[in-house]
Amino acid sequence: MQDTKKAIMESAMRLFSQRGIYQTSLKDIAEETSVSKGTIFYHFPTKDELLYEIMDYGFSDALDKLFMASIETDKLGDKKFIFSQCLEILRDDKLLFPINIHLLEVALCGNEVIFEKMHEKYCQWRKMFYNLIVSNYADEELKLDEEVIDAQASIILALIDGLHVQHMVSPEHFNVEELSKQAATAINAMVSLEVSQPK
Image (cartoon, one colour):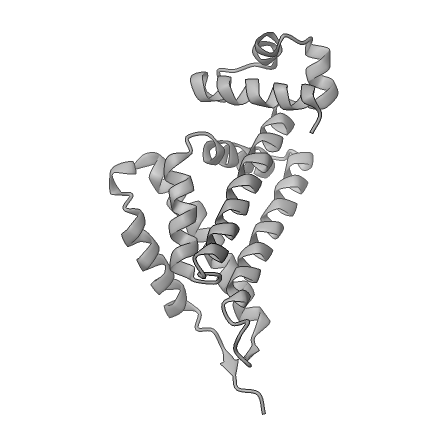
């Protein structure tokens, strides 16, 4: 990442964290970074595209850590572990998820550029959860139902989004351990993984 672009993103993250998304303008970010507004627009044509880049960078880093933690603890594909790691990120990070909700609102209200970016990102996240689930069965000679696994990945993503909204409005009820256990149980109950022994 270019030094100027990285500096702009770091300044933006500081200001968004301190003042909020709606209270921070691109002019504020330019002043904080000691660059012109033209430089901001060169790297980020709109404020929402800057927000998307921050979200993408932050979540990519967080999910890389989740994947590495899964490998180190030998819990690839463990749904409870996946949920607990994602919910800890959700609980501890005060910026990424509000940005995600804002961008979803912008996308669904007609911003085609952000809609395409969010569509692509959600497809990537669903594929990541799909691969994590499949990896849990890597050592077993089983025939996996791809549609069922894709459904599980979609449900994981939907539950994380829904729990995030609940955390924003009712954080006192956010018990990561219990939520992770119940979410994993709910997925297994709703969509059983259809596998068969090879003939």
